[in-house]
Each structure stands twice: as C-alpha cells, then as structure tokens.
Amino acid sequence: MKAQFPGEETESGEFKRQADAFRQWISNDGSTSYAAEPGRYHLYVSLACPWASRTAIVRKLKGLEEAIGMTVVDPIRDEKGWAFRDPSGKIPAGALFASTDPINGFQFLSEAYRATDPEYDERVTVPVLWDRQTKRIVNNCEDDICRMFNDVFNEFAGDKAVDLFPKDLQPEHAKLADFVHDNVNNGVYKAGFATRQRPYEIACRRVFQALDELEERLSKNRYLFGNRIVEADWRLFCTLVRFDAVYHGHFKCNLRRIIDYPNLQAYLMDLYQQPGIADTVNFDHIKRHYYITHGEINPTRIVPIGPLLDLTEPHRRERLN
Image (cartoon, rainbow, N blue to C red):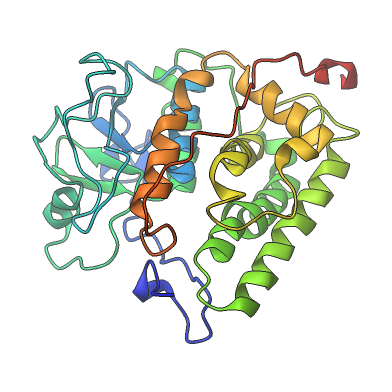
C-alpha cells in the first residue's frame, strides 16, 4: 500500500509522526515575546482530528470562548491540505462548525504556515494557534496549547477553578499521559498507517494491551485519577470517541470495540455528558474526514452509515465516587 504520509514512513513500513514545527510560548509574566491577551490569538482546528479536538475541549472547559476565537477547517483534506470552505447548507452561518476563515481570509491552512515560514515543506497539521498581532503561528503543538490555555490564560477564563494539570499529580499524570499518547492516541495511527503486516500487528496489539490496562484502572476509579477530571482524561476521550466509528474499521483496530469494554464505554459516556463536551464532537466531520481523506486506505471513499452510537445513555459511573 502506498503510504498516506511518505515522509513519515520508515523503510520497515512503520508510521513515524513528524515533530511539531512551531513551539513558541505565550506568557503572562513578560518572559516571552508573546503576551497572554484576550482577543489576540485565534485557534484553528479540525473537529475530525483528535489532537485538535483536545484543544477545543480545553478552551470550552476553561470558558475561553470570548478570549480566544476559533475557526473550524473543512473535514475533507485533499492534496492541498486543510481548507477553509463555505459551510454546507445543513450548518447555519456563524454556527460552531462554520469553516470559513474570518481572520485572514485564507483558503488553505497552509497559507498560515507559509506566512510563518516561507520554507516550510512538511505536512500541515492542526491545531494551530495564530497570533493576530504578528500574523504568524505561535504554536501547533496540542500539548503546549492545552497547557497554555490551562495556565497562562487563566486570568481571562470563565471558569478559573478548572485545573487540568494539578501540581500534586504532576509526575504521575505526565507518565500516564505519555502512556496514553504512545499506545492509544498515536497507537491507532501506527496501526492504521502501517504499510506492512508486522508493524501493523505490533501496533494493533499494543493498542489493545493498553486499552485492557485502562479498562482495569477504570474499574476502580471513575476517572483516571479518582474523582477529578484531568487533561489525561480528555486525551484518552478524544481517541475513545472516534474508536468505534473510525479506528475499529478504517484503521483495522478490530480486536474489540470500545462498547465491548464495560468500564471504558461507561467512562466515555460520562465524559461525553460533561457540560459543553457534546458540542465539540461532530461524527459527520469525523467520519467524512477519515473515510474520504485517506484514499490509500479507503479507495472507494464510501462513508459508512454506522455504527449507531448513543453516548447519552445513563453511565452510572458516579457509583465509583
């Protein structure tokens, strides 16, 4: 099979994700050239992408909608990359899922990359945190963006009490977040974009070994760290919510579905039902992106009509409090 991203494939057929190109930091103490100011920065995301969706979730939970604008790219990425297209007739203009660019009038997100670095020639990714003042990308690393939203923008947050990176859990939280990233978040991509049998099998088995461990952990705790929700929970959520719809079939991670895991499924519903979270999940964007964009994996580009998922049912996770 031809690689989806040739520059990110090893000779042995493994997928190796490229490093984030822009890692500038925003500060509220004058220590960097980017000051935390309301209205200065704009977030570009795809609701199909789990990495970008995590930044949209943190923005929502912190109540930063007034301080940091957000624009959603079209879910279908072609050879020109992520695009800003007029929303479909199903989506009212100005709604959360509108995909035009009101900030720069860009047609493609690649224009933001070229404006920042004219020599940039790698894959254009989301999320992107754009500085309206200097007209350049500050950061395109979801980990950095989530941390900045949580910390340096807290002064402008509608909910200052939300702390997704509690200091008392810092070492253990960082270790678990790395585990989830390597084996689950990126693990499904390693399986899905593998171009040889052995790398696929190794990656796929690691995904389910990790899910088995997390299922056991969540049999005793409502969330990954007891009764409080931290960033690692949302990191895991962004993969779980896409798993049965796209990763199980499209990425061939089909040993089990999330619905086959009693604790992971109930945990997924619990997080989905947290205030404002359902607004950040768009299964139409998710399915159209994966099944139409990845032509090497799905040459017919037929988007399946299933599965039927109801994440609004009672989850009963509160019994673990």
